[in-house]
Length: 101
Length: 440
Image (cartoon, rainbow over the protein chains, first blue to last red):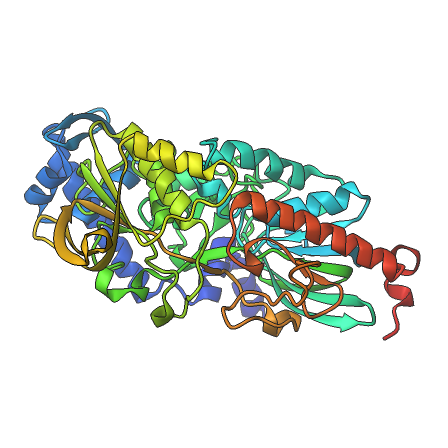
């Protein structure tokens, strides 16, 4: 082994375990990238819609032009992980609001 | 991840639902060492996800979780979750078991179930426990009552950001784990692999899987649960509180066209239970059951049926021919009214639950060498006098793996399977000789 090779080996940063897993899995699939990006986009739109105050699922769906069943699913995910809270009912629907908004 | 499994157990129980837990506990209480294998990350099976049980209306998870804890902590039960039985070979009177231990990507002995990894994970995924109606993260604890209360990484949805690793207070994550195959010897086997419901798409005319307000009955259990996906009863299509709910009975049973000619035995009662509870949960809600026959055969079941009707649940003897979705996600049911000379009417509801039938969750024939009947359930050749016997001596069956049944019957049958397994072990003198004396 030449001195240059020794130096290169010494400088190589050991891979983090998560990087080993990523390499073993062949990285993020195209489908997962698209799924994750779409999720981020929907969340941004939902946060924007609720910024002005509490809204029902159809109200959020109308404002964001996102299908109402998808709005409900994302709101429930945000509720589960503490970003959204549910409140009183309005015309047979539940009002949702951003925590702290 | 524990790669080491002992060389021998007295019995293998396949399935960590209520029947499997009962069989494992009964055997271990008789002094036998039991290996309890569950394919998912938690024991508890279908029962732990139910809202309440009929006819007592006890909280299902409240009466299931003590059994789960007992099974997990029993000194003579080795619990092996997230593990699949690949195959079993008969060796003399005993069995060599080949298991696949799936990686959780964390060390179970140091994970404290604190949820910190789940809270920082940025990927939300439809949660299997809530039949897709709620969300979990890519790394998650299966549910609040899960045993073991340990996280699991769904590597298919991992974006490899490493946030979970940074958040973990015990450094338990281990991304180097891989699936591991292990072997052990057992003296007897009990199959308690449980149930699924018929696929939503089985009856295309009902729109299951296409119309969001047409629900699976197990999804309705989760919706009704206080820890369910919505925290209250809502329509999945638009979050509206429903005011008119229909149950379509025999929507996956007694139907040769979908290969389920048998009665699933529990659908009438779970539908009546859900209907009665909906009357309590939503003020003024209209709940109608469209049925062919009400089969309330168990202890206290007829009284429960009468109670539900007295509480305002409507029962209509009629066969639903098809369901159509309206623009506002309401559903129109075309019904043949059997008590009115077959008159056909259209009835509008805003939510429909299909009372789907029970089918086996696993087909063990290839892996275990036992026979399955035409209906897919494990063949029980001596069903009258030895109902847990399969076609292979030393392999027994309990719970819904042998055929549709309710929880009390599943528990009784699992106990019988445990007794039969214990008798078998004694007959072959397993305790005295063990696998060393088993002729190859």
